Image 1: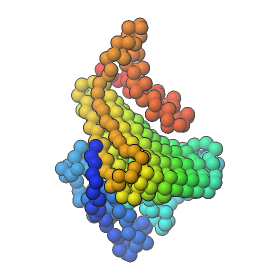
Image 2: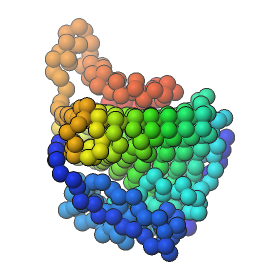
Image 3: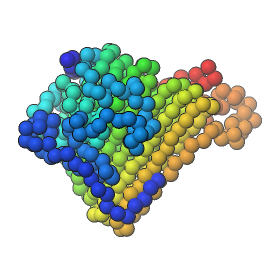
Length: 408
């Protein structure tokens, strides 16, 4: 098996949910890893959480979590195909960030993420070599650290761990390029009072397939910002999860995606409010164009019985640029306590605002440029809130390049 190469230059409920949890035995080498540690429960209703792929049956497409997903391109990953392909991981860290390879003997592996579907479990069980970025307590990274994952064909697996010490601050950019059938997980541990921004950019070639999970554990009075930007790939399915380790945590989950003809992009989020007085904001925006362009956004937020003072809101907006495109948007909110600051969600899918286009064209702006300005404005708040100036021009340029394809 090949291994990565590391180089360094709306639904509401007032009742508690039942939980199905796999607890690996002491000899189970998949249990985080080989320690006999039980898998932390997945708080979503009737969801298995396990490090063992055998605990997840092969999906048939009728299951709730798979009902939108085209399973054909994912079959190699779901079946645990051997890693006969290759990905190259190149890390350009800030001076304050330490980079190391990670193996299954490291206790930090699997301490934040517990797979909640077969795709994530297979990726966890199949990767040969992972990458760890560590930021020591109190350190403030002087610039973003870049992790480039370059696919060079075939089936491959990967794993990333980011460990941020107490009171530390860092920005990580995870950039996926090239082509592969890639299954991977990423874990982010944010210590008490720390701050971490992670930008995950899926800029694959048109034939790439990418599936996996992101999991963050946000410490007391810590801040986590995630920005998931999905532009490339034939099929991309990501499942970001956030849990809070103590009160005062703050999580902001941003997303931007643009689907072309025949492209399928799926993002399934879960924010688990367990401790009291934590805050979360979710803002995902997508645009679609071309026949059979399909996006899926599912946002699950659970406010537990002890999560008094929770403040949460999730929003998803989709802009259909042509006929033949489809956007599915499913916000879910489950509340187990009435002592909250606020909780809500909003979802909308529609076409261009004709009044905006008319206003611009009435002032002499050509139709193509008017459409471009409207789409730029649609995405502007997400791009500006990502907070990584080095990416701004690239994202605006990528959106313009997508718009050039309209009508082709």
